[in-house]
Image (cartoon, rainbow, N blue to C red; front, side, top):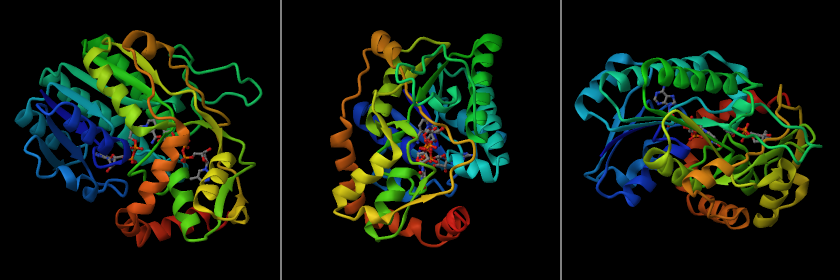
Length: 339
Ligand code: NAD
Ligand code: TDX
């Protein structure tokens, strides 16, 4: 089995590459990644010498490069993680989100059609459903919830999802889509809430909490997301969407306080800053379908996963230290300088 994994040098993609090489030692995994600011080749170092692994640096929007790779590898399955993934960056500069997330998806699907790929899997997000009110804890996102996006990021992901379903209906491309809630775990890029707060707390720097800090996210350990995708590409039904989430809703401020407690740091580091524009209030996934149809259940409890994650950042400073120097400094100053 040949599987092309795009975006495999990023957070979830790299965890998926590790999972697949371990769970299916007879599969060949080909990672296609542009190595944007969010892609890190050092993350993949442990598997670079694995004979069942190949890394190719390319842009999913580059038709020629994508065609060449598909011609060489004749993939059975394509799993598309490659994306611009940070909501705050999409507010600053929407265009690259449209290019990578929508055009890139169409380029990959055209190649998948041309080379007879048996499964094209699109890694999507719960953000395509918009948000839920804080005062209705009985409401959850199901696969039937209407698409209703808030940010340029979520709009670009929703656009890609619609295109994927159109390729299924129009061309019969065998597609599946997963829409997962917020992931956390090793190799999470330090612009996102959990790693940002861990690393800043370690340096006794202020922790920027947006708005009132009461926005709720539904957190899932990254390995559980990878296992869900593994199940969907093998047993999922073509043309279907699967929501992925573990009923683990938490307010941002509670996460930040928990991180401070684990690290033995003072809550005085918390600084409330200007809210994110269009900030979604609450995400909450109903995972009934993937549980009933494919038997998926999350395995890592948040209480364990967050401790494992904090420990990982403590043990792997060599991974994140180069990231937070240089260009990242300019990014942080630009995003938070006037907040
Ligand atoms: P990430 O930003 O950590 O990694 C993205 C990867 O894609 C990087 O390696 C980057 O170099 C690569 N990439 C970007 N543009 C590319 C291009 N044009 N061509 C080739 N490669 C390119 O993202 P992530 O958090 O790992 O998210 C992966 C996927 O999962 C995304 O599609 C995202 O929308 C989705 N998702 C993420 C979460 C989450 O909590 N992080 C939750 C649900 C869904
Ligand atoms: O400095 C911060 N302060 C803060 O209060 C940052 C970076 C975030 N936040 C808040 C905003 C959100 O309510 O924390 C919450 C989580 O923020 P992010 O880590 O930026 O994630 P989110 O916007 O929820 O989106 C994530 O989950 C869904 C991923 O980045 C997306 O790629 C995925 O689709």
